[in-house]
Image (cartoon, rainbow, N blue to C red):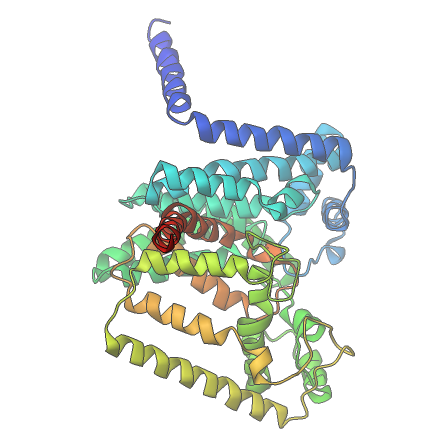
Length: 466
């Protein structure tokens, strides 16, 4: 007993120390939790279609009807959780909403500590506030959907990824968090890919980085092994996901011959689907990368976006871009800018060349197949984002050594995620929701560092005119 009491006091003192040192972020988190709790359980008594869909698939699984449990683009992890906890507490609807609320609250709290790892408490508070007032986070936190729990696990891994010194234990924890997320949504594997790429570009210690990558991947696969084994048993495929369905349903550019071929080879995997018509796939990929998906991020014509200013087109992109330019400390070297201009021009020519080749195969852009933001209306209107995205990307690459070392992994992971998800046109903006954290940090840099300087110079200019 004597040994136990000091331990209890130590635990209490640790908690008090944590609370005293983080009062404001805890208060912001508490305000978010109780506000969203009130809305979720008093005013928004709606069981979303996805929640019902996943719950019923979970019931089919536990009833042994395995032929009825295939879910497009997602594993069985969330349906199993819905049914297990729903039956345990006797209220599946409240359980689903509670999981969303808890996950949203975790995101708000952990966003502060991620930003604090990189830029300190002041920028971290602004970042947390931006995350906490996100309308998309509010919607997901009050909804009986399966989105936020895997996202919260991924974002939690960012806390360990952005530490100044990455230890083996950090990679173990990241592997566990991302493995758990993978069992709910496959998106986590793209985060693993981004982290591994970051490890190999951060320095030249190949052996050291290979060991870190090995630890991360091994722990990830071990944690995710239950769902991989389950998929193999049920579908004969460890990652069951019918990409062909999404291609046929939501690709912007299609033709009848391609649709027929894709329908015949839909079980052969992503590579075969791409190689069936590489030019047509490339045309769709460039459209997703430089037109459709950016609008899901910053509202270039889509109100469903994760911009800091959702209703106002483009403005959220401007603040993120300025924050990014501030963090990378732009080079004034003429050779750098000549190289950037040349690569941008080459990218534009490549996009034009691919589009022309694909159009030569009787490609159509018609509401017969899909109705996204725009119909075929020329290179200039479809691929406008290339004019700003490619220069920003190249500036980041040329300035990689200037980027703060614990901010760099967030940049690398974000770029890999954006390029990977552009294989398909993202039809819900919250598929990009993981990017809310780096975007919020860059917006905080704009608010804390750039905006005051702009206001100060503007004031001096006005005073000078007087």
